[in-house]
Amino acid sequence: MGITGLFCALLRGTISSWYALIFNFVLLGWVSISWSFLFSIIMPRKNLVVITGVFLSTTSLILGGAIPPVEYEQIYSNTYIEILCGLLAPSRFFIETFVVSDLKCLPEQTGFNQMENSFNLPIESKSFTKCHLGQRDKNIGSYSCNGWYWGFLPTFLLGLTIRVCAGALIHIVDRSQQTKIPLLKALKDPKFMLVAVIFFLTIIGLLCLTISTFALERGW
Image (cartoon, rainbow, N blue to C red):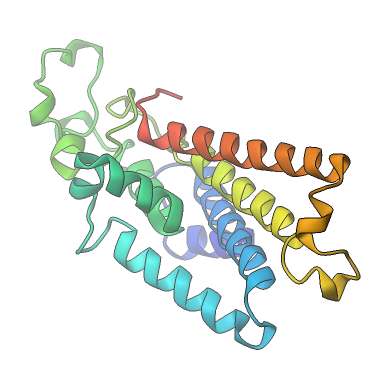
């Protein structure tokens, strides 16, 4: 995905940072591959490519935020939709990062960025507010040509959470084919039970941390 991002930077160009553009593609690949890891454990191998492709493309189109039925206005006005899109759509943060990175580098007169002497501009008059972009970033109106990195943290944490879930499922699904004892019998072992509890708490903690990074307002 890094090579894809490099080609995009060369062919399309960007007025903001090339590093942010390329790394945005890398994180898209990170979270997409995470889903493929998860599906590889619960889906038949012969259907894996098709199921993964359909899931990623469908959720990205429907829940990505760029086109109806779910656009950024609906995402930022409804917490449940925001969480759903953030967890299921790989393109949710990818598209927004792609767009906002260049918009933050536009001149002040475009209304997207405000200098220090523009503190009296009403929030409803700001272009980012009208476009419903980056509404959880406290510094969304600050001028910068270094790229917009706000969506990188939730994307990384989401991919990590999915991979941990996949790692946990390995010890649950198809245990007989792995020459392991049945799960109910394994749970009677204190050591196995302790590991299971640790895995469960880790997944819950990562999930809550991931949601907090994009559902709550932050400036980093």
